[in-house]
Length: 117
Image (cartoon, rainbow, N blue to C red; front, side):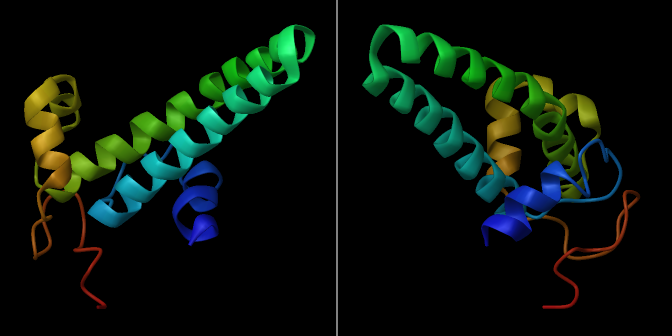
């Protein structure tokens, strides 16, 4: 599960803003991304002042590395519900769209990712 929903987004779909992303792909990426970030911060806090500074830097580098994949998967999620990329900038509405089931047919952004299931 980690490889399918996190590693693939970071490697295969790193800057892929085309196509569609299922709800599960989006939310699993958000979950793993959050767990890794807070895990890095937790280790830094447990190590104390000197170790914390090092892990703080590592956590910041991780955030910078995950910005593009995070935006890309959010854009693909908007495509799955039939909306354009800029809908990610509308706070409450984009959250509602991320929780909404995608279109059950091919749309202008590509085929239904659930079609094989």
